[in-house]
Length: 197
Image 1 (tube, one colour):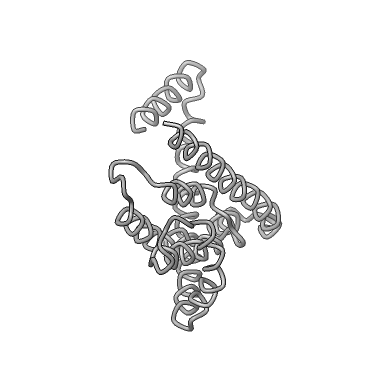
Image 2 (cartoon, helix red, strand yellow):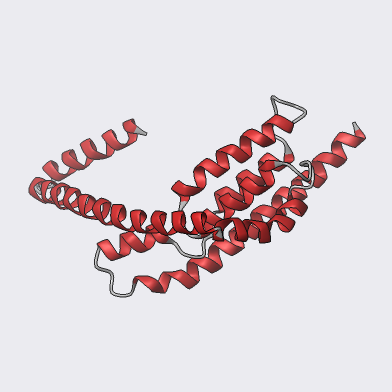
């Protein structure tokens, strides 16, 4: 990735010099750097706010309540895990944090869930069906509130940043549902081919 960025920067400077617009390239670099710092500072504020809200929700028991409500669904989706597996609770907590756009808060739950799934995995050198499903769900990234994107839009003075909430919800819901369906279909065909062997 470093080589790609290096190539893009050098290529831009060379093309700018050839076309006599090197000053425009330098101005774009400077204004881009300034905007990056502005966005990062805005992200720090909004992430601190939402992580604080998440911490309050966690301490008050709201997150645990939501994860208990989701537990029956996660038990059905991750049916190859033992019913009392801590991974089921971690998956629910991870899903809840991701739904509120807090990927940073969701990461520890996701790591714990994967570690627990690996612990009960019979074939240690291959990802289990539960691990593949969980990875697909995480990659799809269902979000009720796209916190990070909202922070970026606010930082660049976008007039109506909240207008992305409904489309983001719809798109991530479709992606999330598709990931679950595809993982379950792949699981079905994999289990059939294994039985035939």
